[in-house]
Image 1: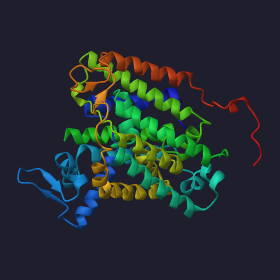
Image 2: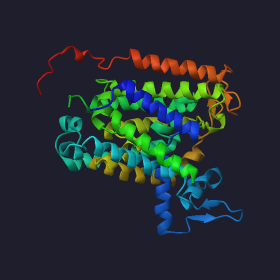
Image 3: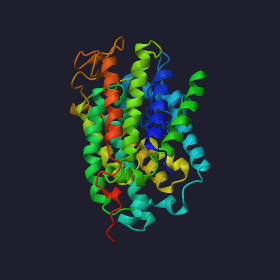
Image 4: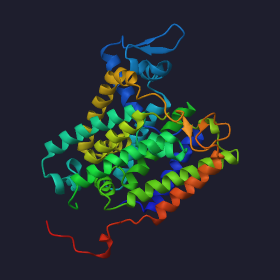
Length: 184
Length: 197
């Protein structure tokens, strides 16, 4: 069972507040780029290199942007933002365990998907993969995702957060209304 | 070292709360986005409002360091990227944060979402020069801009209204919308019989 919106909303708001009070606003999608960079650099160590002044740069223009900010995180992955995402997965894992885990029938195909798109796990996996591709491509183009732009951004009254939210819902609502016509 | 401990504590709390409010569950995302059940939307709006009131209130009282704020730039690509993210979010039921949490919670489809996400992020790394050359990443409305003028933040403002007060007012508006928004807007709450499938 999910938390009532009053309790859940206040708890989530407290987490966003604590993050910005103690360190910085929450963001997630950059870490997909950092993990890509770590994997790529492990295969080809010439991708991220140290500069003469002790910073980092990359042969990839995106990793090298903003003075090698991403390149530096790839070279030193044990930084706040990367650990944050790992800890986030740990928190979700523990929380799910403590409430008894995810039902076996839900684990491959969520009920709402099953009701509208059928029982094929392969189809679900393939379209979840496609969805992930589009989501992260879009998040990187936008410079943030639901956490960084929509929640942290609107919380800080950032114009960019409102622009992002307008785009996200303008696409998400029609797509969901088209795909999920039947109740789960 | 302290920052690493904070990353673990705040990160774990964030993941646990996302799990408990149902944000990592594609059923709740789907029902929110097809507008049949807005319970999760109420939760998110209340969270944004609560965070905003606490942060700006804390800044006014001098308890919260304004320097911790991090405002992202506005450019046309923010809207295009938002559209893409929205489409993929509705299709998969996951966004980047909730996807990795759902994967950790034991959802197998979320593993495929995350794998697709790594490839999507890599595709953006490869195509970034094209976007950069297109001009769609150039700042609009002044770039890193907030609605009001937040004292000592260093960010430009769109209106010149005192930003901390505006932040608290907008936070209150988010909370109010969260309260008045119906959980089931289409009136299905009234015990209506669902058509057989």
